[in-house]
Length: 250
Image 1 (spheres, rainbow, N blue to C red):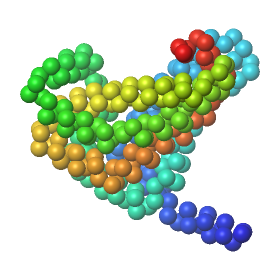
Image 2 (cartoon, rainbow, N blue to C red):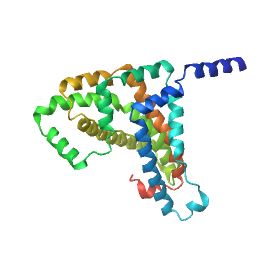
Image 3 (cartoon, one colour):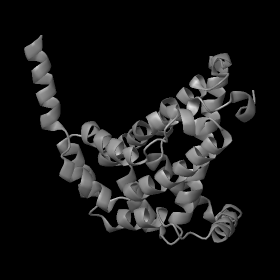
Image 4 (cartoon, rainbow, N blue to C red):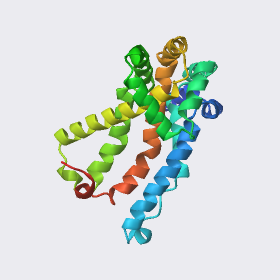
């Protein structure tokens, strides 16, 4: 049995993506920027919860946000094999994917301009074909199965471990999960539609082929799983300060 465990451990170490590959991936994708933004947002959330809890500073140390980046890297390295990560990195040699990633991660988006663009596109019958194509692209980049990983790994444990969470039944959780997936899908669709506003139909067709590639399916699953893993302990640290009666409507 001991020999078998050693063999399994060695096989995992041998076939995992390398640390160098993970760093290369973070350099060319917008995952690093997303992590930094998440660290900023969740630091603010943590401070907000602590300000509402007069005893928090005495009883609970603040969660170290640097762990998010460490845990995310750790997950990616284990979730993807060296060959799979090679395929993912190969995808990023395509200029179209780099343009899309750069646009979707642009922190200087004008929210009002985005709203105007989305309104004009959705009200224009001639844009129907474009919207359909972008929906397919968004479905590949942000599929429901991957979004569900975030709910199951973060939102559900938070609710279950919060004050009053023991009263939440399976029917409520199912409804809450469906609402979460719907909201996340709609938000990502709007972002994808706006991010590709300057792409021609031919470029969108080419982007769809990348989005539906096997390498992209590896990446999407690993990134969503990595985000959930990175945030898991932080969300649980908030649970004892989250009151269902104040935040959730049955």
